[in-house]
Image (cartoon, rainbow, N blue to C red; front, side, top):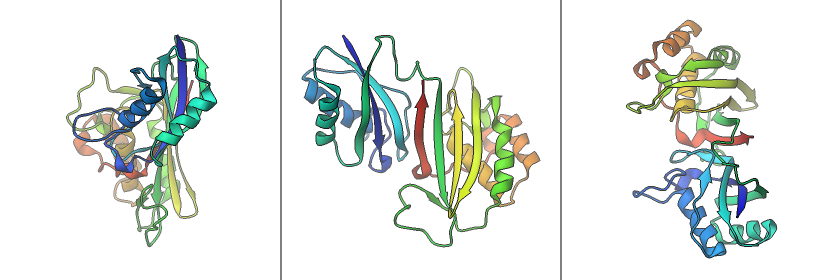
Length: 244
């Protein structure tokens, strides 16, 4: 049995997230249908991350099993000829049978983009949160370091979401500006649902000088979602890379 691994990029605007669900079309559903049509058998698709509705991916990783002898290049080309324009296979390889896209991952990197300019742009409107107000990016970057390491991130989880543990380990946490775009980069061994977007929404309050670094620290320590800032819009978030 072959274990096929694919890296997939997609624009999540038109999808109800990655994972199959009854109330709308999802990226997983579209990818699985294309895979099964080419392989001519049912296939269980395992993904590294379950992105939410409207969230994008540059480096989503999936794996599935097949006994078909089709070459990886032909498989990728065949899938891309069948998939809609907003989903594309980037590359593929054959892995050891023990490889699992989710459980073999060492870390995940998310990038959130904010277009910090007076006017919005049609070239970023699907991929960045437009904020026309002045942001103190230096202060935001400094406060962002408070999430580094192992913490209970209950204050930044999706409201009412239940977890066995809300402790997660953040490896990289940066905020940087490049022209009119502000990038939030978060790498961790795992994330709670909405965690990145809720951190971004709260850090934005720092940049707008609505809360202080001490306030942010208190929010993190409170473990209370009600004390944190708003959830940043889904369209600015991208699953950038999975590290194995």
